[in-house]
Structures are given as C-alpha cells and as structure tokens.
Length: 271
Image (tube, rainbow, N blue to C red; front, side):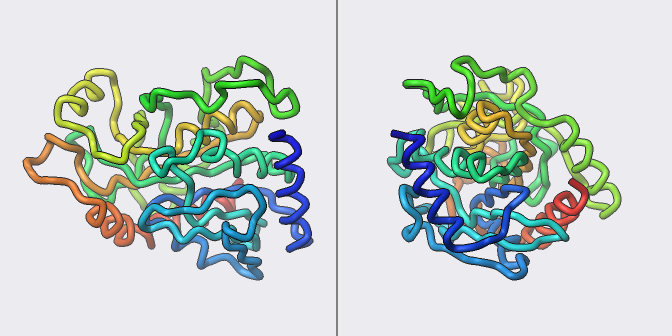
C-alpha cells in the first residue's frame, strides 16, 4: 500500500517538473524564508499532491518548492506535518519516503525549539548532534517496507558527521555562531512543564521541540544522510518565569530567518 502511494506521488511530482532534485530541505515553524530564495521554482501546494497531508500549524505555508538554490537543485518543504495535528506517523514522515523514491540522498531538517541549556538565548542556532525520542511512538512501527529499508534500523549515527562538519565550517566562514546539542522531541501540542524540562536536562537534552525526530528516523531507515539545525526561539518552561506562546516562537524564528537562511544556503552550496 505505502509503496503504491509513494509511486503515485512520485509520478505526480515528476509530471510537474523535469528537474531532478539533489537535496531535500524541511523548513520548520517561521523558517520558510529559504524557500523564497529558490530560483526557477516549481511551487506545488500540498493539497494538490496525491497522498500528502496539509500543514495546519501556524508559520507553515504548506508548499513544495523544487528549483535551484545556492547552485544546487533542491526540494524544499515550506512547512511540515506534525503528530500533534492528528496525523499518523506514516503521514508525518511520508514526504521523506517520497524524497528517497525521487532519488534524493541528503535531507536537511530544520525546526524551532525551546532552549533547555540556560546558556542559550532566543535566536541561537543549534546543530543537532543527537536526539531523544520522547514522543511515545516510533514511525517505523507496523509492517516493514523492505523496499525502503531493513526491519531494524541502526540509529548509532542518526545525523551525518560529514554534513555536521560542513555546517560548522560554513557557519565559521559566515561568522554565524552555531551551537551544538541534543534535541528531545515531544508530541505536543502543549508546551512542556517545568518538571519535564528539569527531567530532560538531567537526561542530557539541550533543546526541546515537537518535530524532526520522526523524519530523521525514517530518513535513516532509507539510508539518507541527515543534517538537522534548530533555531532556539525561546527558553523552555521553568527556565524563565514567564508563560510560553506559539506567537513568540514564530516571531523569534522570523527574526532569525535571515541568518538561518544564509547559513543553510551556504551549507547547501558546499554539500
């Protein structure tokens, strides 16, 4: 069933463009500006793509953009699908399967997150070096699709060391500070409690969010190289004695958008 659906989606996308994408990019909350930099772009709303879900989260435009960026051909998702929107994990990670079937070998994931490390500040960019899946479910649960990967997927190196080093060098050349750390994913949509953040800090997490980990797991299952960078939009619950809002997250991401887009473009150019 999944293979048939993916084949139908791939056939539709190929009917819309003759361009062969090299790199997949998923843009998180408030981080869609990079998509506007794409040249010679073919733009497809998600609702027109067979078997795609529709983004309902604020700050997600819900468009697939295929074109030229920083000298490379990219497939850029302006907005992702979240488990908290009521979608299944298969729907959340479906675009990753499609990218793999289209021949893409590299996936760049981005998100907005809350900083658990008290040294972080709003607007900081964090290279994700590892993650903790606290969503209560794994996207590979269910019948295994042998066409995509083995039943048991190795996760000892979920994020490519080679791509991480490329990101470090690109950030250094652009004089953009790039922090590094472990990202913990929760299902959402409520923000975490101070006690939960205290627990995550004890577990070794540096930032928390509601996405990215499912896509990273499926990309590893497909044997894709993964790079993930998070924009810290606020300090997590309990670190500062102030309530958290979704509007705050999007506003902070928008403010960091120019810096974030410049870094991603430079990384794409160097891959």
